[in-house]
Amino acid sequence: MKRCDRLIDVGRRRFLTGAGAMTAGAAAASVLAPEAKAAPGAALVSYPPNRLANVSDLKVNEPLDVAYPDDEAPGVLIKLGTRVPAGVGPDGDIVGFTILCPHKGFPMAYDAADKTLNCPGHYSRFDCERGGQQIWGHATQNLPQYALRVDEKGDIYAEGVDELIYGRLSNVL
Ligand code: FES
Image (cartoon, rainbow, N blue to C red; front, top):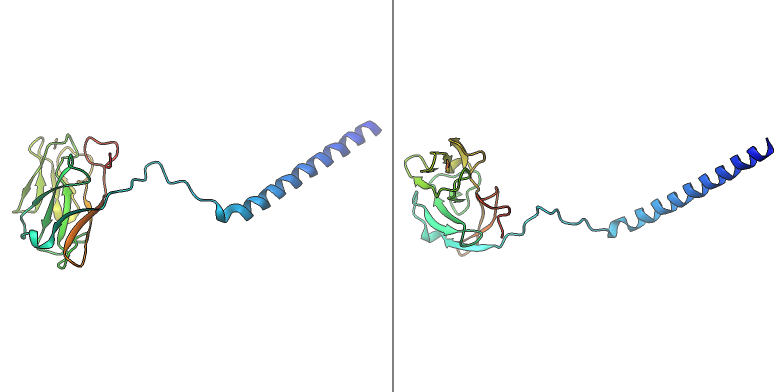
């Protein structure tokens, strides 16, 4: 029994030593924690802020052809004529979208009558007054919309896109 008691005692000491080391490690980690920086997520994309146009270039309900975030990504700026939630500019009515259909990438056309972008491929339709929400068709996502900013000179900048542009693994190549 004496040998067994000694083994138990050794085991207890090892356990306490290990617990002490763990406590010290945790204390050190909590002291170092404020300096630790989270690594950015792999999907986080840094967008180039591009000037697309000036407010004075736009006419109500007439799309202006642009490209964002690069020349291979055609899109439009539209001054809708009515204030919308994501609209920018003095009247809160300027929005921007890619014109590549999210279904198969056909370039879409604007219909001024109901302020929609329409696909000639399989007829998906997207509401420009509601953030590019799909209102009909085969696409499985809404239309990617630009994050826009207007500066004091009226220059319109795109600073991001809220959905993946058709055919890309990342909007910024
Ligand atoms: Fe637009 Fe199919 S490519 S609906």
